[in-house]
Each structure stands twice: as C-alpha cells, then as structure tokens.
Length: 440
Ligand code: URA
Image 1 (spheres, rainbow, N blue to C red):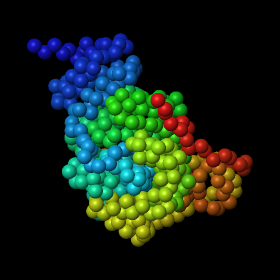
Image 2: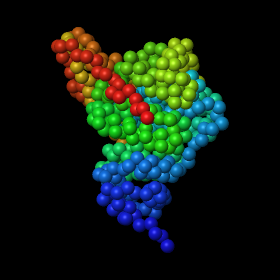
Image 3: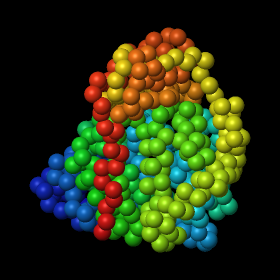
C-alpha cells in the first residue's frame, strides 16, 4: 500500500515544520515522473516561499532534484574541474573570457549555460553570434572537448536535472520564483549534476539584478555556498553590484568583441576585474594556486602571454566556430547597419546608468527574447557605454546604439536617453564588489 500522502507534507511545511529528507526525495521523484499533480507541487512551493527551509532541507531538496536525471563525472580527465555561476545581469559576459582563462591555468571548465530570457542576455546566445559556433553538442562531444581543450560551453541538456526544468516552469506561473531555498536548489541541482569539483558564484545585487537588495543577495550567496559545501564541493561566492551594466557593451556580438578584448589583455576595467576575481577562487579551491595572490599572478600571466586567447580560439574551433574571431573580431562578427550615438545633453559627470533600461532597450532592438521561441538578432545592442563617475562634455556620446533599422532605433531611443543621469558635481565610481567572498 502507498503510505505517501502529499498533503501531509504540504501541511507540515505550511505550519513551518521541517520536512524529512526521504519525503522531499519522494515528492520530487513523483513530481518529475508525473505521479504528483502540479497543484500539489505548486502548493508545496508556496509553503516553502512563506516558511523557508533549513540548510539541511535545502540540501535534501537540491540532492533530490540533482538526481532526477543524469550526473556527469569528470574523474579520469587528468585535471581538476571548476565552474562559475552568475545570477545574471546586463552586459555580464564574464563566462566567455573566464572559461578559457581558467582552462589555460590547468583547471578544466565544463560549463553548461543558459540562453537569455527577458532583459538579461545568455552566454549561449552570445557565443552563437560567432559564425559556426554550435552550443548544442552531445554530452560525449562536450566531454571530449573538456578533456582535450580544457573548456567547453554548451546548452542545457534534457537529461540534466529534469525536476528543475519542470519545477521552474511551475514557479514561474505561481509567484514562487523569489524564494532563496527554491533558487538555491534550482541553481545547484544543475551545477551539481554538471559535476565540477569547485563552484564559484557571482550573486548580482541591484536594480538590474534578480536580487534587488543587499540583504537578499547576501542571503542567497550564503545559501549557495553552504549547500554546495554540504554536497562536498569547494565553493565561494562574491556579491557584486548590478545597478549599471558590466563593461561597456550590451548585445550579443558586441559582448563577444568585448570578451576578446579582455582575453587579449585589455577590456573595460570592471569586466576585467570581475573576470579575474571570479577566476582566482577556481584556482585556489582546486589547489592549482596556493592563495589568491598566486592565482592573480597566474591569471594575469595567461592574459598577457596570449595563452588564454589561444585557449578561447581552440574552444571556438572545437565547437565549429570561426576561431579568427580572436584576431579580427570586427571582420568575423555580424555588424548592425545603423549606428547612432546617444549624446550627453550637457557637460557633467555620469551619476547613474540604469542597467534595467539598457537591458530593455537591447530587447527592443531585437537582441533579446520576448518569449522562449523568439529568434534574436546577434548584431544589435549598445557599445561605448559611459560609466558612473566619468566626465562627459555636452554632445559627447553616452553610448552608441547598433540597430537593424531606423524604426528599431526609434523604438529604443527614449529608453536609452532616459537611462543616463548627468550631474554637475563630481560623482564617485560605483563600487563593483559588495561582499568580497564568503569564508567558512
Ligand atoms: N536561476 C535558476 O536557475 N533558478 C532559479 O530559480 C533562479 C535563477
């Protein structure tokens, strides 16, 4: 006889009690294979939203979701493995320079990434703006590229944490997305199934981020680190600002061009600094560098010697893409036909750049999706974004818009013009690092 009664578990959570590991495992197993109706899982998710979960419960839920599908195992590839997860923000292209940079230091990076939905761009869409880059490779091909090149970035597979795909879709339509235990289990079920030995998290905080307040971002960072460590992985987290876009570009091909600049030893200060600060713990957690200073020195050397750029070219070629992107991005990447500056209305100091407005403008230009099945235009977006604290003269560009047509440009222009505030008084640059890292 079946002694599992779902409503008793929902009631326990509703009343603020902890749910046993075995019950969470059964709930997830039944939900994944369709024996548990969605209304019961939705009620459970809402109970978690209001009542929260202990660390032990979050770990048990994460584990149950992780083992709902395949798990990858990187033993035997001859290198330690590490990966990075960011909660996403406007202009965040860090994964693209980071994976080859870390691989060039001897840590393999098997990265399973997402597409953009809404206003934040996805790493896969950005990589696919490189002609020929195929992100939909089989797990066997993924494994072979990680083993030979040292890094590979592919899309989510059907078999990786299927419970999360189903639960995320349900949370999306039942108002239960912004729950720290549910977000933790969602992110980590996929990352643990992906199998990397060490995980570094970049939790974004601010107007252009999923977590709007510092308090929520810190709580999510703490939860991700404690559950990842509970699952036996080395883990660290940074909390970083996402009020203004990261770097000076937003839009798929434009962000690849900026990633290439970073890989060639240049690039905007903030995006370069964040890439290094997230890469460093991937080296220390795997024992490839003894401490952060040693890690930083190793990373700087791989950028200046061209080793990281070379690794990127190898990864792109292994994915069928045009590796000449590293030497001549302007001739390989698609370019939008209409380019127009947004001019500063008066002289002064940039006092705010609204990441959210810039993200929405890029979507209107065709660089993002309104629904999952939409095609995106890789060439469009914005470049040369001026940052908070910088001085501008009247009429100087605050950014340059790259549009497919005059009509699309006209649609995005009001948002872009409204995205900047310029003050007569000097304004300090915005600090990027809110919480350097979470120790034990
Ligand atoms: N990203 C995820 O993968 N899951 C969430 O729940 C939220 C952000």
